Length: 115
Length: 113
Image 1 (spheres, rainbow over the protein chains, first blue to last red):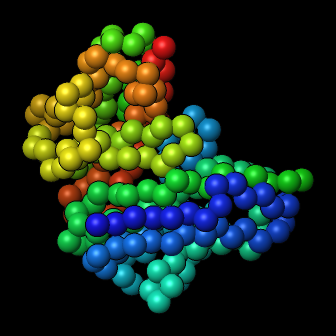
Image 2: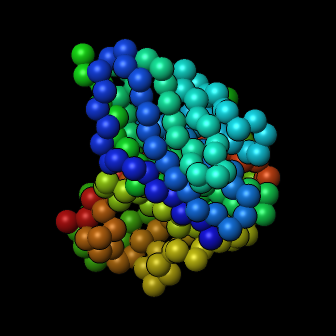
C-alpha cells in the first residue's frame, strides 16, 4: 500500500524567494512519485515525475524535486517564486511497475506568493 | 491534441436526486480513471478502467455510485441517490496503457443541497 504526507497545508513566500514544498511517502514497492499543480477551477497538471531514473527530477515552470530513498521524501523546490506559481500543489505516489497507475495523493499544499 | 473532456462543469442537485457525469478521454488512452476530490483534500480514486473492464473499484461506494465505459472510450459516472457528503469535484483522467502519466480533465463540481 502507498500513502503520502504533505507537510504544511499552506505555504506563503515572497516573490523571488525560494519555494519548498515538502512530501514524504510510504510504499511497499519501489515507488513512482509525482507532483501535480491545480489552479482554481481547473484539473491537475503534471509538474514532474520520478520513475526510478535520475533522483533529481526537473519539471516545468522551473520546478524540480529530489527523490531521497533514505528519507522517503520527494520535496518540490523552485529557486525564485513568481506570482503565477500561486496554486494548490499535490504530491502523489503510485506503485510503479507493479502497482499499475493508480495514484494516491497527499492532502495538498496551497502556495501563496506575496508581492 | 485535445485533452480529457468532462461535462457538465457544474451541477447542483438536491439530496436523494440522481446525477450523471460524462468523460471523453484522450484518443488512444486505454486507461480511464474517476477521482473524487472533496474540498480541502487530495483526489481519491473511485474507479479505474482498462478499456471497458474494471481494474480497481475498491473505493467506489457501490450502493449509490456506478460507472461504465461502454466500447472502451467514453465513460459515465452516476450517483443515485446523492447525499450531502457527495459534494465534491469529480475528476476524470486517462493514460496510455503502462504509462506513468495521467492527464486530467477540468472536473465536474457537484453541490448537493
